[in-house]
Image (cartoon, rainbow, N blue to C red):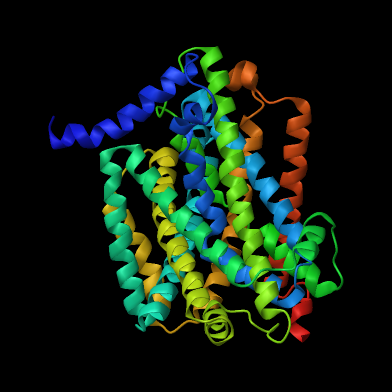
Length: 436
């Protein structure tokens, strides 16, 4: 067998195993394995460097109190990722391609431009996050860390030419590193499990500043590029020719979303719990990633600090890869224009280089990127709501009225929170944290 055939066979074998499962083959975990991949890739958006910064601030400032907000945000993400996968399975097209087919062209162009800006903001945040990890771990300038980040992600993206499975496995490996790192953190510095469990299920906000932070956690959680990308990862991955097979494929997809996003949620809960345990008493002013690392080092030693930075590096590299993949989908499916992925990577690295070379504070750049994402978030959410109930498009797979009402309510909640976040960012509504 040739080297090319060997490389291709990994994806082919995964597809074949999935098709056998859809026809009534092996059940249980063995039957689910071929379907694990797309939601894991999308879940990286919920463990990106922006989450690190927000969760550190939440834990340092309020201890375990905002854990329930993290849980709520994760449940919202689960629903929208499941709906994104569903529409890709049923229609065989990505959400951007469906927008191009069903919406007026001027609206599609506007949606594409907004989504491109969001994709570049996403890449800016992910690249800077990885660059911080490299620069701190290896004592390099931030710009050098950024260039190394681009080189590594460029190399990782080359695995796309070998089919869908290699890149899925690579991203899964990064998810494993992030998860293991926080497991180590919790082992070294166990939280107050009783308090953590209580605040995970009991909503509580004690002052205006905690409300602001809760808005930031929820408002920056559902990521536009993850919704677009998940729908694009489903078509053609495992062929489902009949309605019965599509129904089973949706079931497998929902299980994968539940598993992948549950893990992402646990990681985010662990981030807040670690910050609460380490920083809330005596270091509640910790708000930057670099400060968190340098505070951890003398408090808990090199292992804890190293695990923290390893998780940040894995997060930045993997989310940068996923962000570039999503950007490619946005361009080619909204407007039908395809460019080589290396050209895409070069184009998206320019803003990050400008920001770092100009000496802009890295944490400030992360915050501004989240503002841009908040502005773009309504585009995929509203588009998904407009299409997911159309009988002509979805047939018998159109979601029921109760699920649709729940999705609309969550859409409204996220949009309101994002509006509040934007108003505070631009000073239209006073940010209560400003006086603290």
